[in-house]
Image (tube, rainbow, N blue to C red; front, side):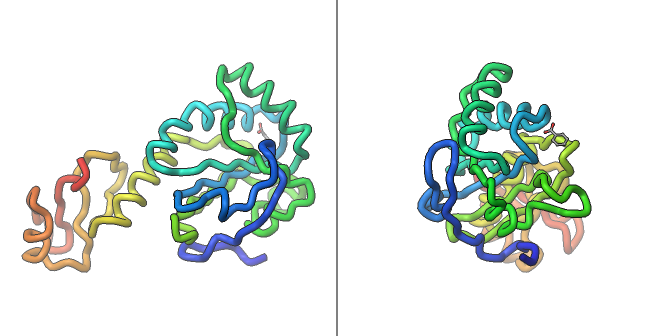
Length: 212
Ligand code: BEZ
């Protein structure tokens, strides 16, 4: 399977999970989605990541993002592992973990990178828009846990730029000034953005976050 790229349709699949059979498109409905892979059950970094993800579920819910994890072990293993995660991370894992024993979803989403490891998945993230297009991908090695604050920050940027003619600058966080889309001439931008436009350079125009 060739790599999935930004703008591609997220392939649908049906798979077993810790919470029953999942059809990706039915599960997502009209929501945004985040699909993230874990190398294997009962591994230390994954245990911290899944506990962190569970503790962040309220933030993903606020943004209308459905969470879906994946690991290449079976459902019974996931259920036992979830007990450990809940215990050591003082949480309740409250989203499904796909039981991808046959690697069907991992292959479909190119989550196994054989030159890194031929059996375990890398740490992939796919953010999927309500129209089922892939808006963001990320690949970390097994040895590096992901930053869930960064994933929320990316979702804030994706949702803002989907609805407004802006882009978000380096290290941007919700509420900070944003960049006017390069396609908009400055005089048009001044009409569009009631909060004002600062022309730092003809190609770099800033405006307050329109949603803040
Ligand atoms: C972990 O999740 O801790 C892990 C998994 C595979 C290799 C290294 C670390």
